[in-house]
Length: 342
Ligand SMILES: NC(=O)c1ccc[n+]([C@@H]2O[C@H](COP(=O)([O-])OP(=O)(O)OC[C@H]3O[C@@H](n4cnc5c(N)ncnc54)[C@H](O)[C@@H]3O)[C@@H](O)[C@H]2O)c1
Image (cartoon, rainbow, N blue to C red; front, side):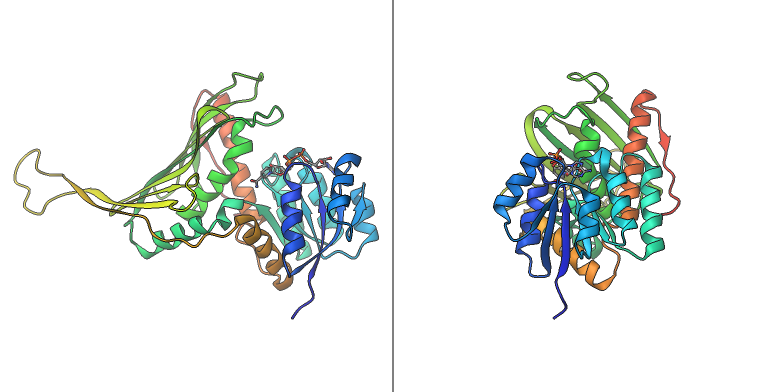
């Protein structure tokens, strides 16, 4: 058995503890050090993980401990600077979503990681969800026919943020899943949104992604909504699929419904028929997506293989987020998305 991957984690705020918990429990990892600029958060980490070293400064952690890889769970504005420091120190790097706040910064990290031969992975958690994996296999099997379009809703009351809008905060999940399931990156996006609570910070956003194949994806996110919804609907030429992540067990429903042309259509009004068939809920073995995500990072660090959500996947998502902001500012006008370096 190969040696465990020696891990340092930077950022022990709201989300970092979940990553640390998984690093600590996975057999392929050794939790060596935790770094946080906040003394209070570092103290919490120290009580929970007495065997790991607690460090207040990233430079000190990188210089003082023999690490193979670093997990970055600091807030998004710091991702570029922190991840750059990690890669320059020659460590594999996992960065929470979104990879960076600009595509120029994301490109910089992708190039740096590739030049140094280091793994760069982004925390697109949903692509490690067993239901999403199942859906991708289902689409590949042809059961749905050709996918025509999909839409995603991620709605709730809270958690309201003030430094980033609802699309940057919530939609990296939906954008990454849309790109993963459709297997392509969009060439343009148009979006509208509104900022009701904090000036300039959009609480509700509707974005339409257009793909080169003609497929489309609509993403609606909001933290100002009475419903708690996390749902994807995928419409294919043969069947339709709904993935409801709020359901505890039966998360996926397949609807054998569609519209077709009967072979013997004779006159106007008979050229299309509706088909209503079975509605089924397939069994999908569910495991914690975060454990799968961290486990995949460890495997990639050990093998050197590119992760499913590698730096390029992170860059593709950042480009969509950027284009959504631009389109909102332009009153919903379509904004082209650059597909180079992908
Ligand atoms: N995958 C998910 O479902 C999910 C959920 C929530 C948050 N996130 C992501 O996790 C990241 C962190 O979010 P959060 O809500 O935990 O933020 P947070 O502000 O609660 O925590 C960030 C922590 O990082 C520390 N920090 C910041 N800069 C630092 C630096 N340069 N050196 C050392 N410590 C530093 C802060 O002191 C703080 O403790 C964000 O990228 C966010 O988008 C992901």
